[in-house]
Length: 169
Image (cartoon, rainbow, N blue to C red; front, side, top):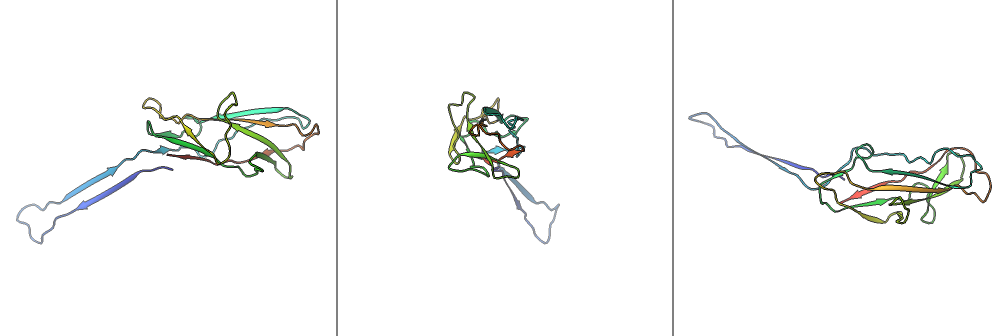
């Protein structure tokens, strides 16, 4: 959601006959509003490769930085983030789906590295405002996937999901 309103007002005076040099007036106006700017739309959070018999939890994370999404906002602007349910959610749980089979790996998303503040799909979360010294919006996503499959090997292949992130102000 990027907001930039620019308007151009042209005013001209005209008469059919001028005694001197003809002149006209142009008024130019721009309205700059508070808002956020996005540079990149997609990031990949990779849980890496694991053996089909792996029965543990694995972690991954990503953050908004100048090298990732590069979401920048006007300083002191109240900003919120919301994560969609993803392409394969069930019962409000995120799941990665096997590329060819109807098999899933559940995962959770957190706001902090200690995994004490969980994101919930569709829930709006307030973010800290940016400053004049740093206008990059500060947020991270920490993910935990449980590879335990009732002590059974999991099908080999790629499991994936896609989540939309909405930034509002």
